[in-house]
Length: 139
Image (cartoon, rainbow, N blue to C red; front, top):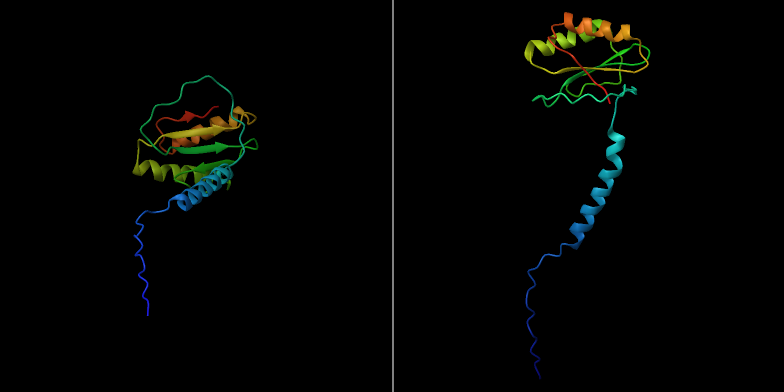
């Protein structure tokens, strides 16, 4: 009986990274396509200006918006900005946030087609809720 000796194969300890690169590229493409769709909010045409941006240490400002019909929308910490709220609700929420953090940056986004009176009324409402200063958002 003849015995054949088999050669022992050397173990390959390398990791094949090509499949990982493929998966990474697919995920990158998915995120690039879906990221613009994740932008939510109301459609407001902001007035065009050449104003300088406000310097602040606040990462997440409180934004109160007024659309062209004069409805109020509030964005505090990821709240639902697509639901209109009453003036009393705006004042209550702003007052609660400012009682916890009096230095919170407060911004007003007013549609360029809304009446000046609606924006002024909102600013008076915010002042009554305890806001010491209010910034206006422009493009």
